[in-house]
Image 1 (cartoon, rainbow, N blue to C red):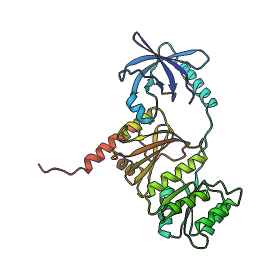
Image 2 (cartoon, rainbow, N blue to C red; image 1 turned 180 degrees about the vertical axis):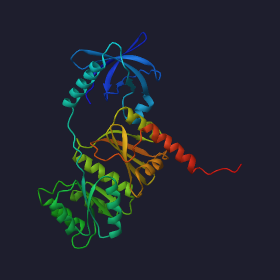
Image 3 (cartoon, helix red, strand yellow; image 1 turned 60 degrees about the horizontal axis):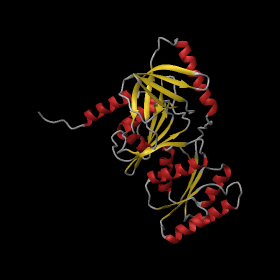
Image 4 (cartoon, helix red, strand yellow; image 1 turned 45 degrees about the vertical axis):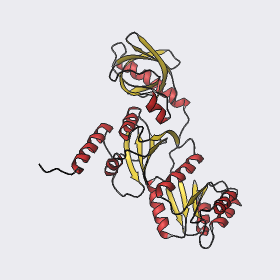
Length: 350
């Protein structure tokens, strides 16, 4: 989103900053200043065609500590308020013009599903990896040996190939060499899996040109994180990380509230111990929740994930086509979670 110079008038004070995440509902202004919640101010934005003065109310504040944990700059989030000096249609025209200018100057994104081929001689591993990666939003193709994996890559070039070092018919080493001999397949990022995690095995894999090496056994959370990072590196404009941090520094309810206010669209990846979940957002609303090894509906999974107070998160900006399976605002999500916790808590005998 394009940033515009902003000036905030609060009583006798004048605070300057740069706009961020402008929407028809409000704007976030990057500034080290802090204002009280619900204070009324006047914001002047200049999109290059003359300043526009709008009344607003402080909705949330991102202080220096929280901002640092998110890898962002501190600032203040505002919701716009009706102004007697600006006609509603003129106000809408001003915002629409600034949003249009921002869209014209911002890079386009694509929301195509990423494809991964997983090759291993173990049917159980293939089933587990396929389920987890499918829940993570990948289109997954499985192969029981290197020859099948090569054929799958020839049929449609994947974003990532995950292959075992030891497989029947064609092993991992031969598969990597065969792919490398084909110019159209040589650039496929390859993740090698092996029970042999010794230095020589890993060195051989990296010398062959693999992008990553995962010792067996591994958790599906680790597999999903590594595969997504490799796939994202191939499509930097389609899946761009904008936030990353720890749940001990900023809670999930705080993240959901901020995303709702800033009208975020993308995927929030949350990991807790060996568990991992993905929350898709469209214009600030949670649309869908998936978990690596849990087959439950989005609302049930969301209530479980909201209990995670430790772990890590990562938010990627990308287009979202998921239908709204949650159907609640963030406020109602948090209320439902509180009710869910109350109902799950053991009852004390009076």
